[in-house]
Each structure stands twice: as structure tokens, then as C-alpha cells.
Amino acid sequence: MKTVVKVIAVSVALFLFACAKKKEAVEVEPPQAKQRAESYQQPTRQEASKEDPLEAERRRLEELMNRIMADDIYFEYDQSTLTAAAKDILVEVGDILKRENRFTILTEGHTDERGTESYNMGLGMRRADAVVNFLVNYGVAAGRMTKVSYGEEQPKASGSSEESFAQNRRAAFRVKANN
Amino acid sequence: MRFYGSMVLFLCAWIYAQQDTITMDIAVSTDKTLPIGVINFEMDKSNWSKLEEKPEKTLARDFNLSGRFSAIELEQYNLLKLSQGRAKHYVTGKLSMSDGHAKLECKLYATASKETVKGFVYTSSVEQVRASLHKCADNVVYQLWGVYGFASTQMAWVRKVEGKKQIFVADYDGFRKKQITSHNSVNFMPAWGSDNSKIYFTSLRNGKPQIFERSLAGNTDKLVFPKLDQTFSPSVNPKDGTLLFANIGQSGADIWQGNPQTGSASRLIYTTSIEVSPSWSPHGTAFLYSSDRGGQPQIYMALRDGSDVQRITFFGKYNESAVWSPDGDRIAYCSMDNGKLNIYTSGIDGNNVQKLTFEGNNENPTWSPDGMSIAFSSDRSGSPQIYIMRRDGSGVTRITNTGENSSPVWANLTKGGIP
Image (tube, each protein chain N blue to C red):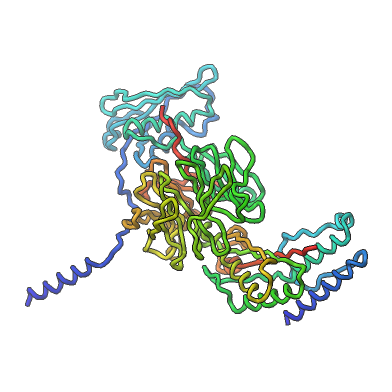
């Protein structure tokens, strides 16, 4: 069901992207996708009006794609093997990426705060590797994907509870639209 | 019959004794410290409000942290108390102001005869009195032990400022700290340049981990290896200043060596596993690092060209961030047991393991330049703070009190520290 929603969302997005190339501006309301991390800066209306409408549209779509791909991939403690749930999400991500070549993705690997800083940098990369390897095997061109490890430095949830730890052991995506 | 019974008992005991056992000492003071009296200084009526604390407090702390002395603090000379404490020597002095300059007279005396063994005089600004007291402590170490102490050294560590990790440099006792980095991103994993004029550190400012160099005299950060994608955990060769570091490759992380002047670098240790936390030996001829090629991180040793790899740790499932003692005879590292990190030391062959910490998470051990003490960070108080302990785990002293502080690294001993 979720997949269907996403595929529709992407189709709508891409249709609008195509339209945007002809029309001046199109109002795109993102579908009821989850609110993504705060780090995506939405251009203010003023800024947007100054820039090239196509560029504004590209950014809007990039943001939309990021919301669609907001599901993080979670891992077990000190592990980098993909769980069944992780693979389900990656199949969706793979489908979206295969359908639309314009987007490249950065995969971030993260760990919880347990263990040492240095080893966790390595473990974060191993998680990003697992995700990218899966997508390559699924048919996404390796050249479209980059990866980074943030180790334990950028937790999603604060605190030292098992719930926080589970939220922080993750791989996350950042999508970029190429012109 | 009784004879056979005792034979069986004897055999059992003998077989048991033959089994491989790892001895582990708990942290009671096993190294003897030398008691020394510290008697209140005479201070003239000038305005000393710029001093952080009374001179005798600074001096007594230096002695206690030195790993060599235990200070007996007295308001005035008291032969009975000094004798009871077995202090054969004591230190006291005078602080006075003339022409806007602070004059610190510091003298080492023999307890019984009250004769001066050696006196030291320092003239400085009031702000530098603390530095003079550290010099006095180092001179006393030199007089009574014949070696250089570390009271005048500095420490770098990571401190959170507005939620972001920044590198700080301070006196080794935590006083007079100064913020070095200010970029509004994560700045961590500091390492001193071999002559203490630079700090190498890792920053996420470009969206990925990269090693930067910061001259302490300047205020710009230089990206050290622009050709490499993701680098972290630098360790500086004490002899030639080259760096060992972890570089994220196609699979896991590998150990690389590079020249921070030219930016050139090459791989030393590469497997499909995670290799991190390199640390040079005191003379730069070999290094320690961690690898999880056996499934979990363990400490390994290799020669400087990456050859002759040997596994060092076999006890415990998670051993990481090893550092070599200045004498080269022992290593200190972190080990995880029951989900908590603690600091251990062992011989360089991995034997003679000693557990030094027992409370909270304890990480990032760093040796004092003379190998007598170990600084580390611990969350035992509820927030991460820096502590110093003797090399046997005794005498734990907290040196930071506010905010969140972690990853201490001790500076090298500078040449000519002793006048």
C-alpha cells in the first residue's frame, strides 16, 4: 500500500516537473508525506521569486523526493546486516531511483552512542555500504550513489535509552536532483 | 589411602594452575608515592584577586597529579605531622609584588633540618604566577626524581559549545582553557603536532569527516588531505610529524599514512574490515590500531611500514583506542564489558592486563608525557568530564567541572622544560 502511494507520489511529482519546464510556475503541494528532518531549508517565497523558476521547481521536487524517501533504514546493535523491514524499504527506494534517473542519492551511515567514536565511524560506513550494495544489486547504477559515515555524531534521538539507540542506528538518504 | 587422596587433590590443584589465567588487578594504589609537605605560602598585601587559587593549592594539586607524590598540606611548618606522614621534604615560599610584577619564591626544604635543598625564583605578571608554580612543581620533581615532570604541559580536548563539539586547549590541570576551533559543525578527535605548535583534528564541516590542521598561533584551518574523501582519527609521528589516520575506502575503513605538509598519503593496512584508531609508538617505529577482522574490534600492532601485524588483545570482546606509553612498555586502551567502556592497561604483548576504571563509561585514555598518569573522559558523574589518574588507576581527580568534555590528548613534553 505504502509503495503504491509512493509510486503515485513520484509519478505526480515527475509529471509536474515535466510541466514546469513549459509553464512558468506550478503550485505543488506535497502529498501527505511525512515531515522530513528540519535540515531541509525551504526557500522563502521571496528568495524563490528571485531565482529562475525552473531552479525553484527543481529544488521543490528535490525536497519532495527527500520527503518520499524519508524512511530510514534501521539496524541491530553493532550490526550492519539488512533486516527484512530494511529490505522492503530499499526495494521501494530502488524502484523510485530506477524509474527516475535525474536523482542521485547520498546514503548516510549512523550509529548509536555506545562504543568508541572511531570504531563507530567505521561501523556507520559499513551500514552505508550495506545499503548501497543492496541498491547496486537491485539495479541502481553505482555512479548515482555516494555514501558518508557520521558515526555517532548526528543522533536522531537524544538520550541514552534503548528506544533512542534504536532510532540512531540507521542509514538515511539525501536526494539530489541533477539538472 | 589418605596418601592417594592428597595425591588426587594435589593433581587437581596442579592441573588448575596449568590453565591459562589472566590476572587482573583492581585499582588500588600499587605504585608507591613519595609524601611531600606543602606549606601555605606567605603573600604580601597586594591585590591577588586575579589568581584562581592560593599558590599552595596549585602546587599540591600538581604534586598529587604527578603520580609521584602525595601532598601533605599544612598551614605552617609542623615537624610532627610531616614526620608522621613520612614527608622527608616540604615546599613553601613567598609571593610578593614589586613594580607591578609578581615575584614567586619557591623553596624545597629538608623536613628534619629545615635546610634549603633548592630554591627557585620567578618574576612574571600576576596571570603567569600559575605557570611559575607549575615550573616550581616540575623543578621539585626533577630535584627528587631526576626526571622531567609534566606540570607545565597542556592538554587538548573536545568541549561542547552551544551543542557543537569544539577543540579546546588548556593547562593539563584544566585551568586557563582556550577555544581553538569555532566552525559551527562537529570538530573532534584532536591530536598534537610533534612540537605542540599545531593541533590536528577531524571536522564534519564539509558534510563528511576530514582531517584539518590548525596552527595554535594562527586562526585558519587547513584541510590536510584534499585528495582523500573521508579521513579521521589522526595520530602524529613523534619523530617526523607524519600522520597515521583512518581513511574510509570502498569497504570499511583502512589505516593510511600521510605527510601533512604535502598532502600525499598511502595505504598501510587495508582489509575488508574496519581498521581505525592508529597510534604511533614513542619513537615512531611501530604503531597500534584496532581492527574487527576477527568479528569485533581488537588491538593490533604493526611496524611503521604496515608489515609484521600481530594481534595484541585476546581478552574481552571489544578493545579499542589503544595508546602506547611513553616508555614503550605498556599500552592503555578501552574495553567494553556489559555494555560499558572501561580503561585497561597491558604489556605490549597483551599480557598482564590491569583494569583501571570501574564506574560509568571511561574512554580515550592518554598518557602523561612521563607515563606516570593517564587522563581520560568519563560519564561517571552524569555528564562527560575529563579525569586524571595514576597509571595504576588510583588517585582519580576530575579536572573539568562544567559542560561536556571528552577526548583528552596530552601534549608532548617540550624541550628545555626545566631551567
